[in-house]
Length: 95
Image (tube, rainbow, N blue to C red):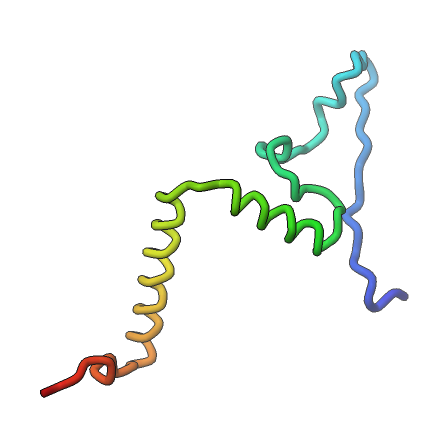
């Protein structure tokens, strides 16, 4: 009973009776839409996946997505501060 082992998903190898395999793979294999464009798909290990994700982030110089992420993060932080009734007046100096 491996307590620290992660569970592997069961694979189901379905091959229809009258299917002719032409070498391009099974049409019944479930694959994500963007798997062929990602480096982080597969069992590469956590460190390798993180390193590949950081390389992709550094190579992708998309300013609009970064700006959108910063705006969403700022809105979520302000919403959190509003929910916990944080007093923002401590940041503003009254004369």
